[in-house]
Length: 345
Image (cartoon, rainbow, N blue to C red; front, side, top):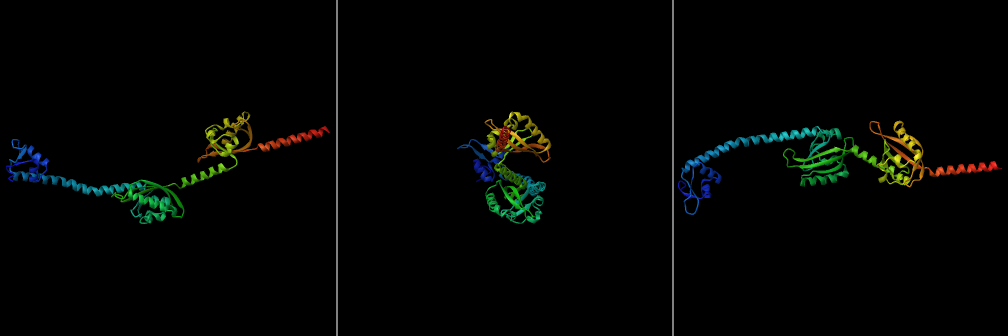
């Protein structure tokens, strides 16, 4: 086909010249190619310019375009490693200035990176654990669960969380709260990032509080805790049995209005102040049951202090001494009766 003077559709012309229809349209705009609207069958292109000149111009434009794009591509190629290095530096800086353990774990479970906090928390220098399988320092009871978590992470990005125990260098176990996410395809990381926080003290405190709460619930005395103003913050089952108030109704109420009988209310208010100011106090009091009847009790109250030593509340243990009071009263009545009979004769 003679392209110097030929009728072609836009598709045919672009195909013959090896260019896109967009480039062809620009050539028409520049006057290098003319439209002929009078041809039978509709619109067509008439190549009226020197095809060789046009091809040479097109080749020159492509060369210039490649030359312009080459520096940008080169810059991108040069900047990519620098960006990766910069991202790695940021990741390292973040991990090296945190108290949490930061780890990078490979697809096979080998530790690729360990933050300096490993030494502060577990006693291991990072270089001692890097290269080892992460399961090496995990408690036997937790290994299967952690292995399942790592397997799941290879299938999904995460994050996934769990609790586990890690062995300290001294042989003790530290309870950790761990969160991990899949970054195996990230060129900067190339592994699973796991952050772990030492919750040993928190866990031990919670266990101790649960144990103490269990003791308070099973002890025979009515145990009641209040803040310094007398508002009830703790109420065990024995208190429920002694006073007839369930914990749900007693909590949040003031002990001075809930329990003491009217003649002893002022003295009990003084006792609260005395315990807060001076320390433990013991004595016999009259409490009040929910149905209104008085209950003779033997109570001991001690202050609750915070970490700075300030009094933040009171805790008291109360025992029903009704039987003892009744026995003492019966003894006094018996002695009085015996004395009266003796005086009569």
